[in-house]
Length: 494
Image (cartoon, rainbow, N blue to C red; front, top):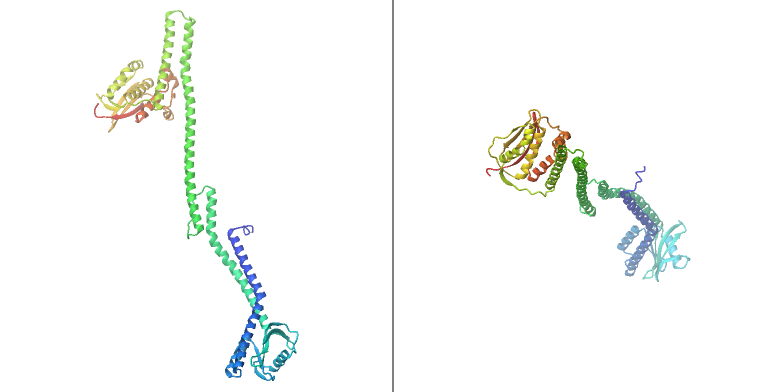
């Protein structure tokens, strides 16, 4: 019930147009009721005057007694419900269309000789007078015309007014009934018509409601080319524009969120970096400070103790120096400041030089080093960065080799590149640790790393160097150990 009284544009239009239709019907009914009888009276006056003119003309021309005029007069009288009486100056009957001519004759004589006073004329001139009277015998209203003709005869014509009243009432009654029917039919038609008109508007309302919920899937389908369809097309364009704009905003927000996340990540990395650097430098600084104070306080005066103290200070200072150099090198690589010099060189010569430089560590660790048998492998890369990568791989392999303590350097030729692998026998790297190996200061085994003096940034340098050269690198667990690898471009000759 509540939904029925809900204000909608369809109901508003139906009510407005129905009210206008009802007002028009009532207005026309009122106009008919007030003016129809007067219009009938005016029309009857014209009929009486026209008939009088015809009789006067016939009497003047001497045709009033002719058969043709008599038939014409009878026709006019019947059609217009008239009674006509004509007498001469001797009061003799000349023409009559009524059944009881004596009554009309007596009434005419009363008018002519003043026997009917007090009657208000409706129309009068020198020859005739039109008036509305009541027949005292039957009490019926008549509209009467009496007067004289040009030939000296007298005439009386009358028509009952009662029929005019009844016709007026009947006409108003019929009009009112048909008006009610027309009103009901009009309300139904207006409701259907306005529903057709307001249907696209309701469609647009549904579209706009969905658009408030950021749902732009609904589209307006136009069928004509009126203003509502133009509005629908504009709504479609607005929907597409909003959808694209919101999509762009979402993309911008996503990028902004990525930037925020990246900034947060960088901040965290900076904090971790400072923490790790502080941790790495704390131990050698403490040792240097402690042994330097021992020397200053002459804890041990013998030369052997002083040499030991000096060696510790020198080793720790060297460790700090290597760490700072590695950090500077890594910073240049990560921020793109390091220059990449691509040149031709012999990879086997580079491998042999690196192995030679690691000879002391290989002997100390009792490592079995296996080198590839190739005499020459020409490549195209940055020789210095390639040496850094190979040195870091080989250093880690030497220090982490266990079991048979085998370290094997392999060179695998491909179509356009060469893959270099550095294998060491021993335990595999846990799968959850592998993704973190390339992170600065990450140490899978902190005790062993500290034991051989690792800083935890060697593999970070490998990552930065390979990315600077735009080549692949990685690590894989094998059944009997671990293999670190990198790739560089191959060439036919140096």
